[in-house]
Length: 122
Image (tube, rainbow, N blue to C red):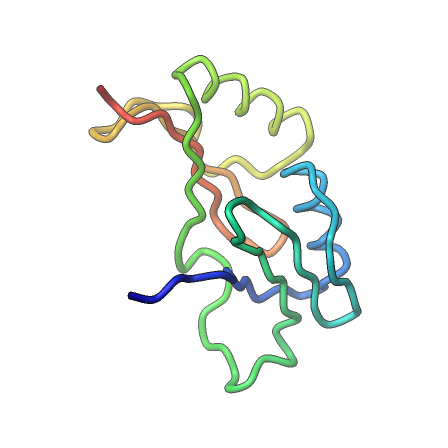
């Protein structure tokens, strides 16, 4: 079995993206340069932000090609997170709504990476 330890997102500006994500998730980068930033998540998982023009082999898909999904404790927490992120000026792609898997909304980071917040149904 493999154990993923680093989730990479390709970004236009590593420092700008690091500031966005650090504010959003409430942590500081453990590594930061003009081309790469790394922020700790949980359980040893790290979020890497790599400036796209330095990616090798070259990336063909950027923001919007997948999602980072974040589970929260209740439907009310979905709505509260949506209100907070809207007030912060995040781009909201989908307002809070009920879907077959639970209550959810979707936002985007500055590079168009989708962030889904959800409370699982049932």
